[in-house]
Length: 428
Image (tube, rainbow, N blue to C red; front, side, top):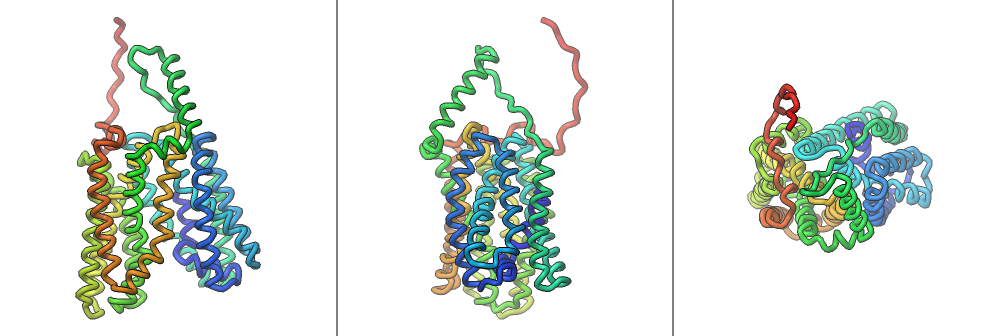
């Protein structure tokens, strides 16, 4: 995950500039192609979910590493529009499907509190890797000029190759199913396999009929809009109502990245140690989001003169926003993975990932339209969506599976208790 994140960080923060220099196409053309292939790439999510349920998340993830690595290796040769569109489409299919496949893989690799720990580590590694990759790309471009973009593309392709080789060494532990009362192990296994086969044949019809999970997916769309604010709305707000320098935008991004990378695992650990239910931890994160958005709306109303006071208030609200992110992200992700039945985990998480994709697509046009009418409107909207998400998460406690909402008792101890000496077997 760390290697993958460093590679992605070499192009994600400045994707338009990156692809413009690689292909020589105009910014408008690059933007239009990326938007179009991003929409088409969403169509690959259901296929990826079905593939995970049939072949396993590890195999699909290895394929996606190969697809993404090949795409970035070919970008420097895709100067013509049709070639760029073809390579971008293949890469977009891999990029859109990858988060859902990785979540499924985390569900296979870890269970219980270990899953929450891995989710928190994943978020921290993602942020740290993106920051490190962006710095590495900046260094390469500053030393090699425009040729540095080609080198960065090949380094990113190499990162996917390294991640592929590392992933081949990782295997999920064999699944253990609890024995049913009064049923021999062989009979229990046969029943479990029969139920899994029935669910697999039903496919997405089972997902569509699971109203609590669909509600959880809708809730995630509301909070995902808030996640999109950092990349879209913050720069508009700093350059517009605050009249702040461009360096303030970079400072806000850096603060968020550093805090997520350095404090994400620790905050998630504190949440688990407090025994919070996953729904309530995710709701707390949404409330922290709402508080930061309300503060930014107030800042847009007051519009203090650009200076140290305005910059300090903004960075304080970014810190509050980041706290919401570090509390919400691991709890919400683990909640979705645990709420998905094992036999259809790929399909369930593919449907869940659609909420992220739709928010990422909708956010730029929605935020810019609202900000043009009144700079306070986007923050008011996000405050409302975050509070609504928190309220619905609390109501879903009664309808989601108990094992998804509640952490197992052993997970509330950190660090893990020391192993006890084995006791001699007792023969009855």
